[in-house]
Amino acid sequence: MQSFDSPSGVSRLGRYQVLDTRDLEQAREAVADVYLDHDLAAPTDRLDMTLNATSDRLFTLGYLTYQSAARLVMPATEDSYHINITVGGNTIAQRGDGARGATAAGVSGLALLPDRVTTVRWSPDAEQYILKIPRLVLETHLSEQLGRPVRDVVEFDFEIDFSTPAGRTLVSSVEFLARELDRPGGLADMPIAREQLEAFVMSQLLHAGRHQYSDALAAPDDPVRRGRLAPVLTYMEQHADEPLTPQELARIGCMSVRTLHATFAQELNESPMSYLRRIRLDHVRAELMRSDPGVTGVNEIALRWGFYHHSRFAQQYKERFGELPRETLRS
View 1 (cartoon, rainbow, N blue to C red):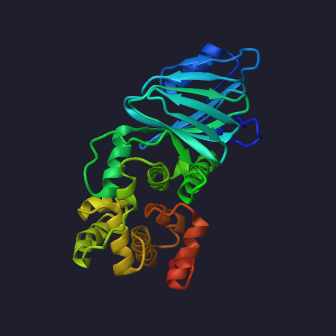
View 2 (spheres, rainbow, N blue to C red):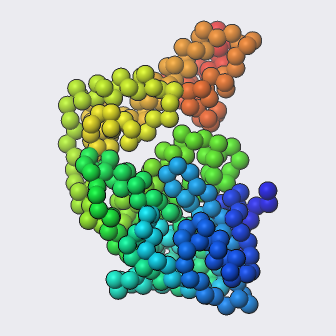
């Protein structure tokens, strides 16, 4: 498939082309199909719209530019949150409740809510990554972070500040996700890693944007007793060959994700995913030691246990066991 670069010359989700057009109605229909129905106005003599987008279990990530002074009037999203991350040019916006916001590359973004009408005006050179996150997905993720149910719309401030540490990390993680999805052999071929990175992006969004749950998210969380980790550790051992996530492990332990991380740090001096990696490396070693090198290869076993980057896996294996995996297999 042809790779479509942004006007800045950087490939942005070029493997996932939806439409490249100079036709205003085609441009509107394509964005409506991926995101939501809306009204679009733009000078047609300069319009050069590109939309690239990909969806997975957690959310949709898209790249959009009009290369024209476009004006979009969008109804309430109803069942999703839309996060506009400007990576070129700028936009100005107004929400149905009177709130005003503006975006610029690396400076600020916008949060479009399920219950607000929004009008956004794009500069001719504006380019954006746009996240479409279903309400159920984001609100469930937030409830897992807090350790309690979330039943209300997350009332993000209209503008998201990207100059804060959390804001910079949010932008960097979205750009990294896009680059990896574009790269052959990258996250597009690694469902476990992709889901974990998408969950990280949502966590960063919840910390970067201000909303009614921000103070609760930022509050320190005391670790619970080591005994609370026992069912989590047992579950990790029994399901190490499955795509486990911190959210799933927190549910097993009946605790929030923050409590899970705090307890692992205090009791085991490592993160849950680091502990899981050690379990998986132990399983890989056990298989290598009982396998016939003439029949079974290292990569086959590594993939079975969730190691997709072969060079990184070999380095991690040697750090743990003092030899390369192929040496274990030969011996």
